[in-house]
Image (cartoon, rainbow over all chains, first blue to last red):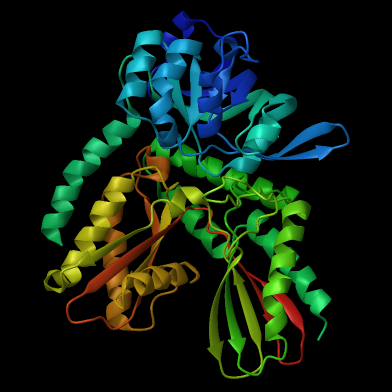
Length: 193
Length: 288
């Protein structure tokens, strides 16, 4: 399924865990330090409009060619580290789609349900493939302050994916389903060792 | 011998490691893809393989986390230029960071500053070991933070025995879920002491996939663990599937009667390695 950003809350709520989507439009990058930074700013100081983009948990490898930034490799980072910020972040900025890897916790799930958003999984480590779908670096903020991996990069992407909707706005969570099944299997495995 | 050539070849080895997945790992991923029965897991393996081929073709780092640069140097006692090796490795890392490029990944734990060239206190880290002869081998193991964060140690009561080790590994693979970018490779170090078990676990990661421990009872133990953890169904990226772990490598040392240290070192599917070999004749060669 192809999705062009910006996306309405109504459309986001139609997405279900297990759906595979490809995104076209603008995405911004935010890891730990960027979450902290953006949340510390007043509304006037926030340089981007997260509501119209998707947020990508990623610290890229980027190089400058002449005056232009070029993305070399940009796969997802472990999303669990952002759990401490995400409820507040979604509540304040209403970002509709989060892209990361490994899944997130219950507070994020609550935010997805309350404010109408989804968490999607991009294949961990697939940094070169991701770079292929990034057409242009639109801008970068707080680069000097936070450094290359932690800065807020804004990318224009085309058919960025495959992204698996792993947590939806209805409380479904693929990771949790897998872990619940694994918990049962684990008991069988341990008794058979 | 030509030390400048050694530095150049080390830069090439770091480029090769970052951009080209070793063939043994690729073959294991392809096999996992072919036999995967869960469509979500299969799609993840497809994306991994597409990424591997694209990165190799375009000479791009397959993963943006190009790791902390770690080296295992196996040096002959009679290798003539030992003194220069740490400096050559450091220079190669600085150059590779610019030329490949690699992500600058070294952060000062107190001052939070990143020097931007992948060096710092004790980094690049070099593990030394010595053998007879005058050859030199430098194993490059750039390892990402996501999988390294999942490495762990248990000081088991020795009474728990081998079964206890298996239980610890199964519990840990379950607990990790999708976080270390499965399908992973597990390096398990047993015995010695806390530091020795971890270090053996990391060394075990250097072994090629499918290569078993030379002692039969250890080889059998590796396969038993592999079979057990793959029954969990965590699958590629923790989204469900048949392959959670590609291979298990065990190394061991004798233990203290009161201790059974078990170190688990976790490597993500991007099991990046390269070797630079300096022969007795001074000839320098990059291998994978």
